[in-house]
Image (cartoon, rainbow, N blue to C red; front, side, top):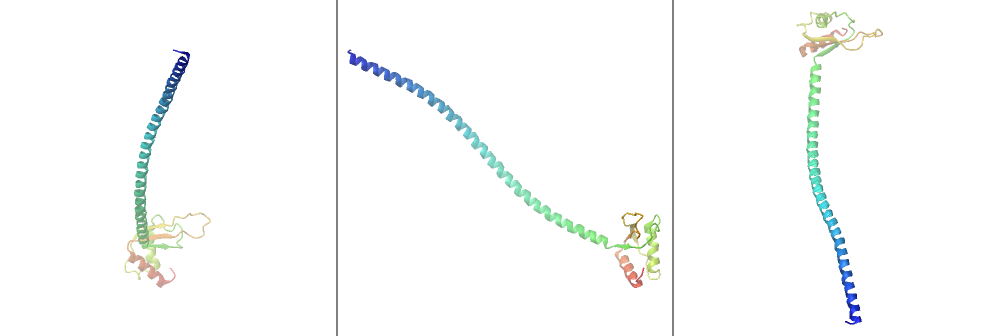
Length: 178
């Protein structure tokens, strides 16, 4: 072989060696990139699953919130209805009550019901009352009894029958000053 062929062969071998080294180097780099890409794909897949789960949970929570809002609206309506019914019941309950003012403190003794049972016919006149009004309950108004108070506390009387209260009021108006 002559020198030119040898020199060509050397160049060729050098090129082949360089090609092999570059291929090995590129294969190593590509392998690293491929591993990283596989890891990224796995992470992306995991994130997609988590996002899907979160979307499902958000949707479920939105449905729950809608249901709860409907329940709150229903309960608010029921509450308003019950409040109206309680107000009506309280008003009907108070319809049997009368307040007596100006009765001196401690004049009723221990039994306010018995005292008022005697005082009402006395004030209205026993001849005017066909029946002595039945008193269900009586008590002093629960305000303080401080020494500086000049007026006595009112006595609240609850009549058993509404008609007894109405008759007592009618007789008091006729008598004018009771």
